[in-house]
Image: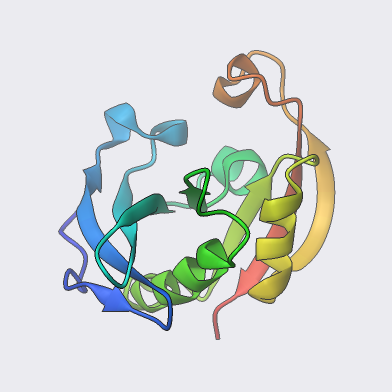
Length: 150
């Protein structure tokens, strides 16, 4: 795996993405390497992170998702995660993705709204397999969304 084709900062109306690092398979969810970006306000204040998981392992697609994001408390409620996802779309397309699976916990209303704002389609609710990495983290169910990038 090489570094992302787009390593320069990407900026939108409210936030930017600044390349942080590649998360190696040994440290990554479902052992799938990922590109990690810091989400920053336009003044450079870090407010969260977003990662693009570079694989299509069945368990990743069904439970973990190919895209993960988090916004720090105090910065939530401003659609920053949705804007970060839209910025990351450029990187995903450069990496050859035409669609991405996104999952979230059923009680994560903010993440559900983010999926809706970016135009991802709700597919289904699935139970997380007992004994899996996500189960050990405390997740019991996931909502699955498919985001068409083209």
